[in-house]
Amino acid sequence: MIIAAITALAVLFGGGIFTFDSVRDAAEEVIKDRDRAKQVAAITEQADEEIKSFTENLEKLSEQLVEMNRNYDLTRAEIDAVSLQAKKNRTAFFEKYIELRFQMKDLMTAEEWQAMQRAKKE
Image (cartoon, rainbow, N blue to C red):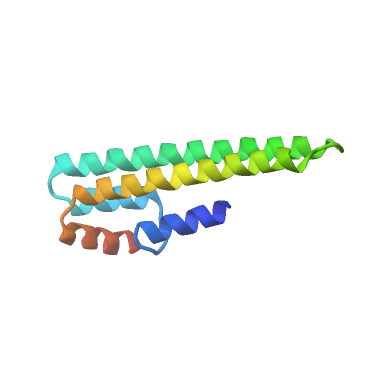
């Protein structure tokens, strides 16, 4: 599931090796308007927090599933409930990432966006 999340993020933000540090650095280099560059940096910090929260939730659900699995009398409904929660968390995570991506896009011109994509690959 983590690999799927990383792959989806790479697709959402333009492919290549994706890290928020590289986006932040590229934005600071490419966007000449310091105010907008700071806003993009703030969005990347928010995205970092989203990753951290998503990862923590995933780890908690995984631990819960391991603990539940020790119970011989575990029912399908109990496992399905954990699976449903994981799906809800994943959906909320991706919805937030899409929102953050468009917030960043709205702060940049098309030329800045393309330059940023080139800069982060170097």
